[in-house]
Amino acid sequence: MNYRHGFHAGNFADVLKHVVLMRVLTHLNAKDKPWRVIDSHAGAGRYDLGSEEALKTHEWRDGVARLEQAPLAPQVEDLLKPWREALVAARSRHGSETYPGSPWLCRHAMRANDRLIAAELHENTYRKLAQALGRDERCKALEIDGWTALRANVPPKERRGLVLIDPPFEEKDEFATLAAEFIAAHRKWPTGIYALWYPIKDERAVAALLDSILDAGIGRLLRLEIDVDRPDAAGGLSATGMLLVNPPWLLAQEAEILLPALCERLAQGPRPRYRCEAIRPDG
Ligand code: SAM
Image 1 (cartoon, rainbow, N blue to C red):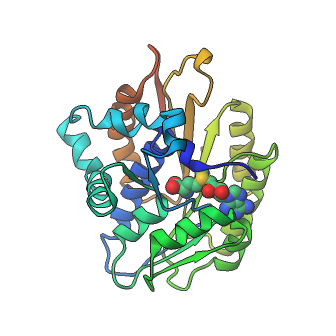
Image 2: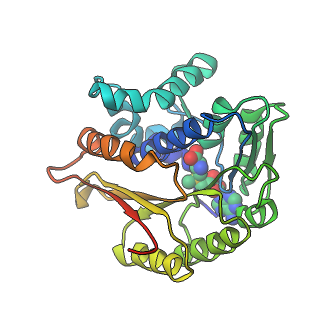
Image 3: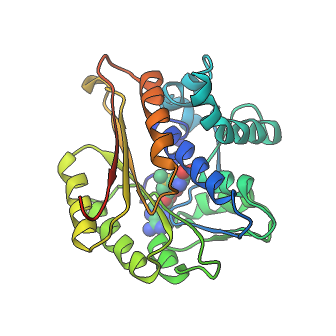
């Protein structure tokens, strides 16, 4: 297990994931009822963009830094606001080079009765995560396998909330594992919101993930993807996606506004692309 998210923190894929995460949490906060987030592959909670890891790849320069060059259109900025405010809060609290990861964002968005379960298997990363979440009784950091944490914690007692699944995709069979574990969790908690993050290196892997989910009879999907057209020679990731299951009903409309703007701002080549596709059981 070698993956360290510090090399990639704040890159274009993180920006998409975290902007969408903050939209989902904003919708959950629109009702008084408490929610719970289960973050199965939580990472360190927050990252230092001045660290050796971040400075080695500089991926954040083509990610979060691009969004700070100039404001986007007002309707895009309205939708980015919860994420931008969280960014400002993280920096004012932990320093100007801080980039908040998914558990930090969840903690920032949560109210008195909301809860977070964040699993992280890597020992050193877990230590950072526990530190990032502090002694907040609403948040539980677990040093365990994220799939085990997922199986053990759905359905949550609130029966309302989000499962974020963001594995490192180090293993060859990680798409298959993601499909199987998600389907098992969905069987136990069919009404939860799920957000599955994936890299797009091979379209067939994404198609197989979708097929397995649809074959399992699971509908109400929203497929969000961006390809920043990173030149092949530069290596690394060019495209990423998130599959939302049971998304908040306004999210598809919001994504239609956000994705083209993000795609244009984050483009690394002349032909960036995005996809925003609602998939329903009846096609
Ligand atoms: N969700 C985080 C965020 O958005 O800020 C980033 C998570 S990063 C992509 C994936 C994390 O999963 C890494 O920190 C890695 O150490 C951890 N990890 C790898 N295998 C794991 C497993 N089986 N269970 C839990 N965590 C795991």
